[in-house]
Length: 376
Ligand code: GYE
Image 1: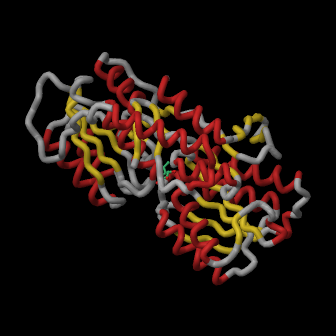
Image 2 (image 1 turned 120 degrees about the horizontal axis):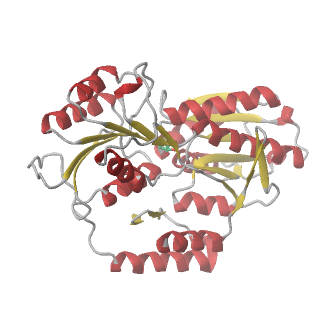
Image 3 (image 1 turned 90 degrees about the horizontal axis):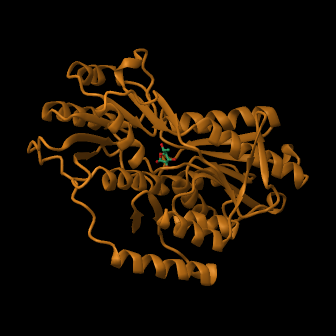
Protein backbone atom coordinates (compact mmCIF):
# COMPACT_ATOMS: atom_id res chain seq x y z
CA UNK A 1 0.00 0.00 0.00
CA UNK A 2 1.40 3.40 -0.84
CA UNK A 3 0.04 6.65 0.54
CA UNK A 4 0.69 9.96 -1.07
CA UNK A 5 0.05 13.45 0.17
CA UNK A 6 0.55 15.86 -2.73
CA UNK A 7 4.34 16.37 -2.62
CA UNK A 8 4.84 14.11 0.39
CA UNK A 9 5.57 10.45 0.58
CA UNK A 10 5.11 7.60 2.95
CA UNK A 11 5.06 4.00 1.82
CA UNK A 12 3.95 1.22 4.06
CA UNK A 13 5.24 -2.29 3.41
CA UNK A 14 4.78 -5.38 5.51
CA UNK A 15 5.68 -3.84 8.85
CA UNK A 16 6.69 -6.19 11.63
CA UNK A 17 5.66 -5.38 15.16
CA UNK A 18 9.09 -4.89 16.69
CA UNK A 19 9.12 -1.12 16.43
CA UNK A 20 6.96 -0.27 19.42
CA UNK A 21 4.47 2.49 19.97
CA UNK A 22 5.61 5.16 17.57
CA UNK A 23 5.43 3.03 14.46
CA UNK A 24 2.04 1.54 15.35
CA UNK A 25 0.90 5.09 16.03
CA UNK A 26 2.23 6.14 12.62
CA UNK A 27 0.43 3.25 10.95
CA UNK A 28 -2.84 4.13 12.63
CA UNK A 29 -2.43 7.76 11.65
CA UNK A 30 -1.72 6.80 8.04
CA UNK A 31 -4.77 4.55 7.92
CA UNK A 32 -6.95 7.37 9.27
CA UNK A 33 -5.48 9.76 6.70
CA UNK A 34 -6.10 7.28 3.91
CA UNK A 35 -9.72 6.88 4.82
CA UNK A 36 -10.11 10.68 4.94
CA UNK A 37 -8.28 11.31 1.65
CA UNK A 38 -10.63 11.94 -1.29
CA UNK A 39 -10.35 9.43 -4.14
CA UNK A 40 -7.27 10.31 -6.20
CA UNK A 41 -7.77 12.51 -9.25
CA UNK A 42 -8.46 10.78 -12.53
CA UNK A 43 -5.42 10.05 -14.62
CA UNK A 44 -5.98 9.48 -18.30
CA UNK A 45 -5.40 5.96 -19.48
CA UNK A 46 -3.26 5.63 -22.57
CA UNK A 47 -6.39 4.70 -24.52
CA UNK A 48 -8.22 7.97 -23.77
CA UNK A 49 -7.03 10.11 -26.63
CA UNK A 50 -9.84 12.65 -26.73
CA UNK A 51 -8.38 16.09 -27.36
CA UNK A 52 -9.08 18.65 -24.65
CA UNK A 53 -7.94 21.97 -26.10
CA UNK A 54 -8.19 23.72 -22.75
CA UNK A 55 -5.80 21.28 -21.08
CA UNK A 56 -2.03 20.88 -21.38
CA UNK A 57 -1.54 17.39 -22.81
CA UNK A 58 1.37 15.45 -21.33
CA UNK A 59 2.56 11.94 -22.16
CA UNK A 60 4.56 10.34 -19.34
CA UNK A 61 6.60 7.25 -20.17
CA UNK A 62 7.48 5.71 -16.82
CA UNK A 63 10.03 2.92 -17.04
CA UNK A 64 8.27 0.51 -14.71
CA UNK A 65 7.07 -0.21 -11.19
CA UNK A 66 10.07 -2.19 -9.95
CA UNK A 67 10.53 -0.43 -6.60
CA UNK A 68 8.82 1.69 -3.94
CA UNK A 69 10.87 4.62 -5.18
CA UNK A 70 9.34 4.18 -8.62
CA UNK A 71 5.80 3.90 -7.31
CA UNK A 72 6.23 7.09 -5.27
CA UNK A 73 7.71 8.82 -8.32
CA UNK A 74 4.77 7.84 -10.55
CA UNK A 75 2.26 8.89 -7.91
CA UNK A 76 3.92 12.25 -7.41
CA UNK A 77 3.66 13.05 -11.12
CA UNK A 78 0.16 11.59 -11.51
CA UNK A 79 -1.19 13.46 -8.49
CA UNK A 80 0.31 16.77 -9.68
CA UNK A 81 -0.53 16.73 -13.40
CA UNK A 82 -4.27 16.41 -12.83
CA UNK A 83 -7.27 17.76 -14.75
CA UNK A 84 -7.99 20.13 -11.87
CA UNK A 85 -4.49 21.52 -12.32
CA UNK A 86 -5.10 21.93 -16.06
CA UNK A 87 -3.44 18.80 -17.49
CA UNK A 88 -4.49 15.79 -19.49
CA UNK A 89 -1.95 13.13 -18.56
CA UNK A 90 -1.29 9.98 -20.57
CA UNK A 91 0.60 7.55 -18.36
CA UNK A 92 2.41 4.50 -19.74
CA UNK A 93 4.32 1.92 -17.67
CA UNK A 94 7.05 0.32 -19.82
CA UNK A 95 7.69 -2.64 -17.53
CA UNK A 96 11.44 -2.04 -17.57
CA UNK A 97 11.68 -2.37 -21.38
CA UNK A 98 13.19 0.36 -23.53
CA UNK A 99 11.27 -0.93 -26.57
CA UNK A 100 8.00 -0.27 -24.69
CA UNK A 101 9.19 3.26 -23.92
CA UNK A 102 9.95 3.89 -27.60
CA UNK A 103 6.45 2.66 -28.51
CA UNK A 104 4.87 4.89 -25.85
CA UNK A 105 6.76 7.94 -27.13
CA UNK A 106 5.64 7.21 -30.69
CA UNK A 107 2.04 6.95 -29.47
CA UNK A 108 2.39 10.29 -27.67
CA UNK A 109 3.69 11.86 -30.89
CA UNK A 110 0.70 10.48 -32.81
CA UNK A 111 -1.65 11.79 -30.15
CA UNK A 112 -0.05 15.21 -30.56
CA UNK A 113 0.72 15.78 -26.88
CA UNK A 114 2.19 19.15 -25.86
CA UNK A 115 4.98 17.65 -23.72
CA UNK A 116 6.65 14.28 -23.23
CA UNK A 117 7.97 13.34 -19.80
CA UNK A 118 10.41 10.44 -19.96
CA UNK A 119 11.90 8.41 -17.08
CA UNK A 120 14.36 6.36 -19.20
CA UNK A 121 15.23 2.80 -18.18
CA UNK A 122 18.81 2.96 -19.46
CA UNK A 123 21.07 5.71 -20.79
CA UNK A 124 21.83 4.62 -24.35
CA UNK A 125 19.69 4.10 -27.45
CA UNK A 126 17.42 7.18 -27.49
CA UNK A 127 18.57 9.02 -30.62
CA UNK A 128 15.98 7.72 -33.07
CA UNK A 129 12.81 8.09 -31.08
CA UNK A 130 13.81 11.43 -29.55
CA UNK A 131 14.68 12.78 -33.00
CA UNK A 132 11.09 11.94 -33.98
CA UNK A 133 9.80 13.89 -30.96
CA UNK A 134 12.06 16.79 -31.88
CA UNK A 135 10.80 16.74 -35.48
CA UNK A 136 7.25 16.86 -34.12
CA UNK A 137 8.37 19.89 -31.98
CA UNK A 138 7.37 18.23 -28.71
CA UNK A 139 9.61 19.22 -25.78
CA UNK A 140 10.96 16.24 -23.83
CA UNK A 141 11.43 16.56 -20.08
CA UNK A 142 13.64 13.81 -18.62
CA UNK A 143 13.12 12.75 -15.03
CA UNK A 144 15.21 10.53 -12.74
CA UNK A 145 17.77 8.67 -14.89
CA UNK A 146 19.57 10.48 -17.66
CA UNK A 147 20.31 9.59 -21.28
CA UNK A 148 23.63 9.49 -23.13
CA UNK A 149 23.18 11.39 -26.41
CA UNK A 150 25.63 13.54 -28.39
CA UNK A 151 22.92 15.95 -29.48
CA UNK A 152 21.78 17.67 -26.30
CA UNK A 153 18.92 19.33 -28.18
CA UNK A 154 17.09 15.97 -28.17
CA UNK A 155 15.73 16.85 -24.73
CA UNK A 156 14.67 20.11 -23.14
CA UNK A 157 15.71 19.53 -19.55
CA UNK A 158 16.48 16.84 -16.96
CA UNK A 159 15.46 16.65 -13.30
CA UNK A 160 17.06 14.00 -11.09
CA UNK A 161 19.64 12.90 -8.55
CA UNK A 162 23.42 12.94 -8.45
CA UNK A 163 23.80 9.16 -8.23
CA UNK A 164 27.60 9.26 -7.99
CA UNK A 165 27.38 11.69 -5.07
CA UNK A 166 24.84 9.40 -3.36
CA UNK A 167 27.37 6.56 -3.64
CA UNK A 168 30.26 8.75 -2.49
CA UNK A 169 28.25 9.60 0.63
CA UNK A 170 27.39 5.98 1.45
CA UNK A 171 30.96 4.79 0.88
CA UNK A 172 32.30 7.73 2.95
CA UNK A 173 29.98 6.61 5.74
CA UNK A 174 31.35 3.03 5.46
CA UNK A 175 34.94 4.27 5.40
CA UNK A 176 34.49 6.48 8.46
CA UNK A 177 32.47 3.85 10.33
CA UNK A 178 35.06 1.09 9.80
CA UNK A 179 37.86 3.43 10.80
CA UNK A 180 36.09 4.49 13.98
CA UNK A 181 35.31 0.86 14.90
CA UNK A 182 38.92 -0.11 14.09
CA UNK A 183 37.80 -2.64 11.48
CA UNK A 184 40.70 -3.16 9.12
CA UNK A 185 39.81 -2.84 5.41
CA UNK A 186 41.58 -6.16 4.84
CA UNK A 187 38.84 -7.93 6.82
CA UNK A 188 36.01 -6.75 4.54
CA UNK A 189 34.42 -8.94 1.87
CA UNK A 190 31.80 -7.00 -0.04
CA UNK A 191 28.93 -8.44 -2.09
CA UNK A 192 27.64 -5.87 -4.59
CA UNK A 193 23.98 -5.90 -5.74
CA UNK A 194 23.66 -3.82 -8.88
CA UNK A 195 20.55 -2.17 -10.24
CA UNK A 196 19.40 -2.48 -13.87
CA UNK A 197 22.60 -2.49 -15.98
CA UNK A 198 23.10 0.73 -17.92
CA UNK A 199 20.68 2.81 -15.78
CA UNK A 200 22.18 6.07 -14.50
CA UNK A 201 21.41 5.04 -10.90
CA UNK A 202 23.34 1.79 -11.43
CA UNK A 203 26.24 3.50 -13.20
CA UNK A 204 26.74 6.21 -10.55
CA UNK A 205 26.29 3.93 -7.56
CA UNK A 206 28.58 1.21 -9.00
CA UNK A 207 31.26 3.76 -9.93
CA UNK A 208 31.17 5.19 -6.40
CA UNK A 209 31.74 1.74 -4.91
CA UNK A 210 34.60 0.80 -7.20
CA UNK A 211 36.41 4.10 -6.61
CA UNK A 212 36.01 3.75 -2.82
CA UNK A 213 37.05 0.07 -2.92
CA UNK A 214 40.22 0.97 -4.79
CA UNK A 215 41.03 3.83 -2.42
CA UNK A 216 40.40 1.79 0.73
CA UNK A 217 41.66 -1.59 -0.49
CA UNK A 218 38.25 -3.17 0.12
CA UNK A 219 37.69 -6.52 -1.54
CA UNK A 220 34.51 -6.78 -3.62
CA UNK A 221 34.06 -10.58 -3.85
CA UNK A 222 30.96 -10.64 -6.08
CA UNK A 223 28.89 -8.31 -8.24
CA UNK A 224 25.42 -9.45 -9.30
CA UNK A 225 22.55 -7.85 -11.21
CA UNK A 226 19.51 -7.54 -8.91
CA UNK A 227 17.52 -5.35 -11.35
CA UNK A 228 16.39 -3.05 -8.48
CA UNK A 229 13.74 -5.59 -7.35
CA UNK A 230 13.27 -7.33 -4.02
CA UNK A 231 12.83 -10.81 -5.56
CA UNK A 232 15.99 -10.57 -7.66
CA UNK A 233 17.86 -9.01 -4.72
CA UNK A 234 17.00 -12.08 -2.65
CA UNK A 235 17.92 -14.50 -5.43
CA UNK A 236 21.36 -13.03 -6.14
CA UNK A 237 22.20 -12.58 -2.46
CA UNK A 238 21.48 -16.29 -1.93
CA UNK A 239 23.90 -17.03 -4.76
CA UNK A 240 26.57 -14.75 -3.24
CA UNK A 241 26.14 -16.35 0.20
CA UNK A 242 26.54 -19.83 -1.29
CA UNK A 243 29.61 -18.94 -3.30
CA UNK A 244 31.35 -16.65 -0.80
CA UNK A 245 31.03 -17.87 2.76
CA UNK A 246 33.21 -15.01 4.01
CA UNK A 247 31.05 -12.13 2.67
CA UNK A 248 30.40 -9.63 5.47
CA UNK A 249 29.04 -6.53 3.68
CA UNK A 250 26.21 -6.20 1.14
CA UNK A 251 26.25 -2.96 -0.87
CA UNK A 252 22.80 -2.82 -2.41
CA UNK A 253 21.96 -0.18 -5.02
CA UNK A 254 18.40 0.21 -3.70
CA UNK A 255 16.24 -0.57 -0.69
CA UNK A 256 14.05 -3.17 -2.40
CA UNK A 257 17.09 -5.30 -3.22
CA UNK A 258 18.35 -4.69 0.35
CA UNK A 259 15.06 -6.04 1.75
CA UNK A 260 15.50 -9.12 -0.47
CA UNK A 261 19.12 -9.45 0.69
CA UNK A 262 18.04 -9.36 4.35
CA UNK A 263 15.52 -12.14 3.71
CA UNK A 264 18.25 -14.23 2.02
CA UNK A 265 20.79 -13.62 4.80
CA UNK A 266 18.32 -14.55 7.53
CA UNK A 267 17.14 -17.62 5.61
CA UNK A 268 20.76 -18.78 5.39
CA UNK A 269 21.06 -18.67 9.17
CA UNK A 270 23.44 -15.69 9.22
CA UNK A 271 22.78 -12.48 11.09
CA UNK A 272 22.28 -9.02 9.60
CA UNK A 273 24.10 -6.35 11.59
CA UNK A 274 27.18 -4.20 11.99
CA UNK A 275 29.43 -6.58 13.92
CA UNK A 276 31.16 -7.71 10.74
CA UNK A 277 34.16 -9.23 12.53
CA UNK A 278 31.88 -11.57 14.46
CA UNK A 279 29.80 -13.09 11.71
CA UNK A 280 27.29 -10.30 10.99
CA UNK A 281 26.63 -9.09 7.47
CA UNK A 282 26.29 -5.33 7.16
CA UNK A 283 23.79 -4.06 4.58
CA UNK A 284 24.00 -0.54 3.12
CA UNK A 285 21.53 0.79 0.59
CA UNK A 286 19.88 3.68 -1.29
CA UNK A 287 16.46 5.39 -1.52
CA UNK A 288 14.88 5.85 1.93
CA UNK A 289 11.33 5.84 0.57
CA UNK A 290 9.90 2.52 1.76
CA UNK A 291 8.87 2.53 5.42
CA UNK A 292 9.81 -1.12 5.78
CA UNK A 293 13.36 -0.22 4.80
CA UNK A 294 13.36 2.75 7.20
CA UNK A 295 12.22 0.40 9.94
CA UNK A 296 15.06 -2.01 9.09
CA UNK A 297 17.41 0.97 9.29
CA UNK A 298 16.06 1.82 12.71
CA UNK A 299 16.47 -1.82 13.81
CA UNK A 300 20.11 -1.76 12.62
CA UNK A 301 19.50 -4.29 9.84
CA UNK A 302 20.36 -1.69 7.24
CA UNK A 303 23.38 0.26 8.48
CA UNK A 304 23.05 3.30 6.28
CA UNK A 305 20.84 4.56 3.42
CA UNK A 306 21.80 7.19 0.87
CA UNK A 307 18.63 9.19 0.24
CA UNK A 308 17.21 9.28 -3.28
CA UNK A 309 14.35 11.75 -3.59
CA UNK A 310 11.43 10.65 -5.81
CA UNK A 311 8.83 13.44 -5.64
CA UNK A 312 9.22 15.26 -8.94
CA UNK A 313 5.59 16.25 -9.59
CA UNK A 314 5.89 19.94 -8.79
CA UNK A 315 9.33 20.18 -10.40
CA UNK A 316 7.89 18.83 -13.66
CA UNK A 317 4.90 21.17 -13.52
CA UNK A 318 7.23 24.13 -12.81
CA UNK A 319 9.29 23.23 -15.87
CA UNK A 320 6.11 23.04 -17.97
CA UNK A 321 4.93 26.42 -16.59
CA UNK A 322 8.20 28.01 -17.63
CA UNK A 323 8.02 26.51 -21.12
CA UNK A 324 4.40 27.67 -21.44
CA UNK A 325 5.64 31.20 -20.60
CA UNK A 326 8.36 30.95 -23.24
CA UNK A 327 11.14 30.69 -20.64
CA UNK A 328 13.82 27.99 -20.50
CA UNK A 329 14.13 25.80 -17.41
CA UNK A 330 17.69 24.87 -16.34
CA UNK A 331 19.01 22.13 -18.60
CA UNK A 332 19.99 19.97 -15.60
CA UNK A 333 18.50 20.26 -12.13
CA UNK A 334 19.68 18.11 -9.28
CA UNK A 335 17.49 17.40 -6.29
CA UNK A 336 19.16 17.73 -2.90
CA UNK A 337 19.46 14.60 -0.80
CA UNK A 338 20.69 13.43 2.59
CA UNK A 339 22.06 10.30 4.22
CA UNK A 340 20.42 8.24 6.97
CA UNK A 341 21.59 5.91 9.73
CA UNK A 342 20.17 4.86 13.09
CA UNK A 343 23.70 4.42 14.44
CA UNK A 344 25.11 7.63 15.89
CA UNK A 345 28.76 6.56 15.52
CA UNK A 346 29.13 8.80 12.47
CA UNK A 347 27.22 12.08 12.58
CA UNK A 348 28.92 13.78 9.66
CA UNK A 349 30.63 12.56 6.52
CA UNK A 350 33.02 14.33 4.21
CA UNK A 351 32.95 13.95 0.44
CA UNK A 352 35.51 15.91 -1.56
CA UNK A 353 35.96 18.88 0.70
CA UNK A 354 32.32 19.15 1.68
CA UNK A 355 30.74 18.01 4.96
CA UNK A 356 27.28 16.45 5.02
CA UNK A 357 25.33 15.75 8.20
CA UNK A 358 24.11 12.18 8.74
CA UNK A 359 20.45 12.15 9.79
CA UNK A 360 20.21 9.84 12.79
CA UNK A 361 16.89 8.10 12.41
CA UNK A 362 14.73 7.25 15.41
CA UNK A 363 11.14 6.00 15.49
CA UNK A 364 10.09 9.56 16.42
CA UNK A 365 12.00 10.83 13.41
CA UNK A 366 10.18 8.40 11.12
CA UNK A 367 6.85 9.61 12.50
CA UNK A 368 7.79 13.28 12.38
CA UNK A 369 9.03 12.99 8.84
CA UNK A 370 5.66 11.76 7.62
CA UNK A 371 3.84 14.40 9.65
CA UNK A 372 6.19 17.13 8.46
CA UNK A 373 5.73 16.08 4.87
CA UNK A 374 2.00 15.82 5.31
CA UNK A 375 1.89 19.41 6.57
CA UNK A 376 4.21 20.90 4.14
O1 GYE B 1 16.92 4.16 -6.66
C1 GYE B 1 15.48 2.50 -7.54
C2 GYE B 1 14.66 2.50 -8.76
O2 GYE B 1 16.50 5.43 -10.90
C3 GYE B 1 16.64 6.56 -8.84
O3 GYE B 1 15.41 3.23 -9.69
C4 GYE B 1 16.05 5.47 -9.60
C5 GYE B 1 16.28 4.08 -8.99
C6 GYE B 1 15.89 3.93 -7.54
O4 GYE B 1 14.22 1.31 -9.17
O5 GYE B 1 14.78 2.10 -6.39
